[in-house]
Amino acid sequence: MYQQVRKIKPTRRSISGVYPFRGEVSIPFESSLERDFIILQEANPRVSRIVAQPVELSYRNSQNRAYRYTPDFLVYRDNCFPHDSDHQWKPMLVEVKPLEELRKSFSKLKPKFQSAFAFARSEGFLFHVFDERRIRTTKLENLNFLNRYKRFPFDQYDTEELELLLSRVEVLGQCTIDNLVTSLYKSDKMKLQTLAQVWHLISVSTLACDLSLPLNWQTEVWINEYE
Image (cartoon, rainbow, N blue to C red):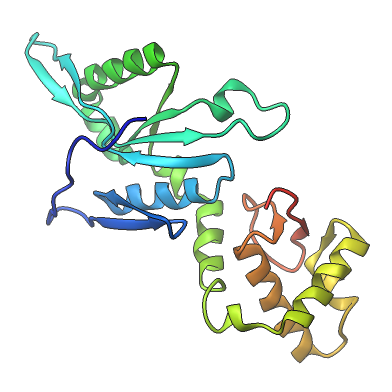
């Protein structure tokens, strides 16, 4: 298993810090884009571990000068879902770069990426470059919205109310939030309270939905069988 080989130092150019991955381990990041990448991976049930700055590679630039390069992350993924293809479970070596930087400096970055691709292939990994188009998506917006429903006071919900909600989902099967809430309550006050409970249950992965779509009353939810 690879370990972090380069320490991330504070910088004035961007936001840096550590992210508490699933409350179990702190993963350092060097930019808000890297932080957002970690948030996305945290929500992926296939992802088991993320290593920041996992390996130092050597490459030569267009003038044949030797340099060192450290990709941003190595993402370990479990083959835990039926019919997963190779690209869904193989470890993934990742570089996170803003789109503007990729466009302006691609000729300079290309030898780095080629060295990362060659290394990944030799290890049986995949190599991917992520910019904001692949990170700052509707799914990320949804995850940031749901994050507020994980903690107090939402984690203090009445257990019987949550069990009633879940039992109704089991009866209805996959259903819209609107149909679910309306089947339980008539008053607007109780509907809004129950909506918040639904957001909480999604945020802690008890209920599931398609997070790639905007969240609203027509969002379809179901029991998360993989939790």
